[in-house]
Length: 348
Image (tube, rainbow, N blue to C red):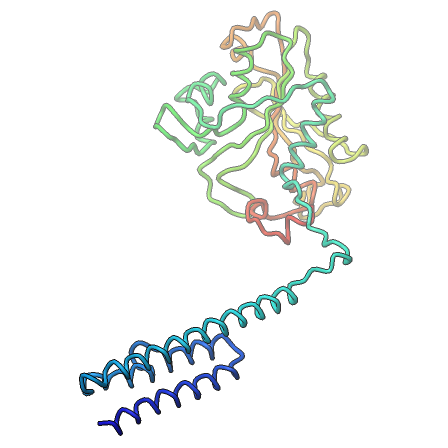
């Protein structure tokens, strides 16, 4: 039995020497963890394997071997802790060196944010009218049938309703506004003449989305009410807008049209800025580009808000922001405005 005891103690001394020697040569955290598992692992470690013979020892031998195993284990754990601490410190210093910042280098220029092209157009349009004495106002996007249709001289059975594929929230009552024109009514209910406002905002139609149509798009509504106002005032206002927006040499054309809430009504065109009226794909080879709709406010609309049409007159106009942007920037795909493609947006 004495020979077996001496053999076990010798194995433990040899294990301590071998493990310590290997530990000194380790240079990576992965190798250190492998060393830990090999010598001190709870399941298959070498020290655990030697400990498995303890039940076979005599009562007097067990304390001797047990003390030796604990001493070897304590020594190896202390060396492991010291080695791990040294390696962590070295790896930290290496990482700091790799990530060291040279404060003498010039700073990195961060890309500046930009205003969306539609926002740019809205601002440019509204600024033109603000300089003409108009005030910018807003209105709700979720509207009632009254403000979106009835107050604008479009009763329930009016055929003009078929021209606007409405997105109803509550059929016959609540809807997503199909135009910014309801803001006219809300403003006139709250203000007495003179009234000069422009109302930019989103509108919604149940449209099939393609290169020239979106289910959600933007309009800018304009309204002027005063004691003296004529079609000549409307023409002068819109001619000034068109030339400031698209260039001082632009020709402006008014064509008779129909809108339920204006009478008389007119579509406004400009001579094509891309071909100088010679004919191109933008103007569909007509030489003219449709810009907006306009007209004198129908007396029935004035009565609806409590204005006396014998005393007050006015004009209104409405334009699609996307249409203005398509013409201004020579773009033939409306979906680019909502695709969030940075290659497109960075051009503006």
